[in-house]
Length: 607
Ligand code: AGP
Image (cartoon, rainbow, N blue to C red; front, side, top):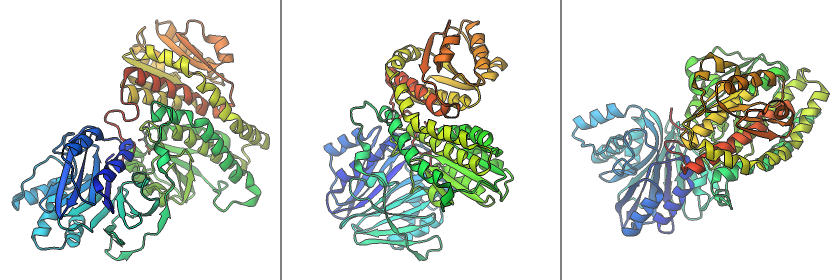
């Protein structure tokens, strides 16, 4: 998604804007630009492609000024190009925007008939043109920006910069996050706190409908009713060190290798809060009266919901209603005031997941955000926040966040099982013990990386792949397929093992690798039969199992990866590691942009 930043600074703005935009690269983008006010005049530089192109343009033809705005664009309306890149400038106003203006065609038609001439294909230009018209009508910059925003429908986070106004940026947001950064003698506006990490960690979060009038001495916020509002200052939980790759070639590989440490941190945190059952932790969820659990999310986060469904149903005996957030919000399922709704999202800014939350919170007894960004919109709008404690996830591909989402949700399921007496004390203790030892098992699986890298080289020449798993391995099959396709651009499908013979088996031939994800659990025999069906048709199987499984079935397999034995409840977390590494090394072999795959964004803040 797009990234925006605005600076009312003490130093030259251009280098600071570039640095801030680099912190936002992880969001995914295809062009970038900045604008500054230099001796009262608006100056602008934009470039298609990566920030290096913008940096070269600025080196050739610098822009001065201590006030400026910057943008990384993830194209929604209008192809990636320099002319469609932000900032969009019309007369004395320059703006940057994250989101989608849904009524831009209507505005464009109205403005064109009033004599405006559009230069681009973007929805954002309509905002700049509208604001310029209000300025021509004699409105002040703040009133022109406010009147412009009041005409918009859709999602937006905006920064307005005005010719001659070196001490003013107007910010506005609806359905897309915007934060105010409080520096020392300087002020900032940005899409997220990471953009400001090198300048300040003192931030205020704007709410939907807010207008922020920012000068170097501070900010005045007008709420959706245009009444002055207070948005408290907080200390953001990020720092610049977060964005250091260390000795890893890509953030994704670094984040895969962080998982043992993060799972240990998750254990420390949640074992304390859940173990104190007798202390009636104030923020603990009461599952004793719950009639249903709702689970929703997008992409990898949805697969964490799929795993959690098994846990809540099997360990706590609670029926689960689960759906992709983009479907849930339009399906509008009947909900009850005895249900609890979980919304899982690494960024906490995914538009579909936010909308699903807003639908559910009208009815359910409690909404729970399972998030990595504790200051995110999803967290702020939910009744309970369960932080997954994964630290900033920079790579567009979600890896450590997925493991930590599952580690967070499993604690809720076993807590629910204890409260409802569907999980015996011994069973509870076994799972807690297994969680304590899980980081060590993950480290052992990471030791398979060199073998997986060799297998990946063969995978990289494939035209497609199937991933199959049964029970809790089915979501991991889906995740493995998603990782492979989003990173290496090789088409892949995840299937429930039992579904293979209902169609997909027609795809099987010697060129189509089939990844079989099968710990020796109660469904192993069934998955083993599916694998035999593949081998009988000349297919090549990569079997991911444990030593018992390998002893029973690695005859004829193309490759077999043997994982350590693990408690069946925690197998989804452990069996995710090899499919993450497979996708990473296949993509690295192919030379794709691993941390920012084409067309993808880290946080999909548009529907
Ligand atoms: C994960 O590898 C994908 N990039 C994507 O599916 C992601 O999980 C999805 O967009 C949800 O993002 P969120 O967790 O920030 O809501």
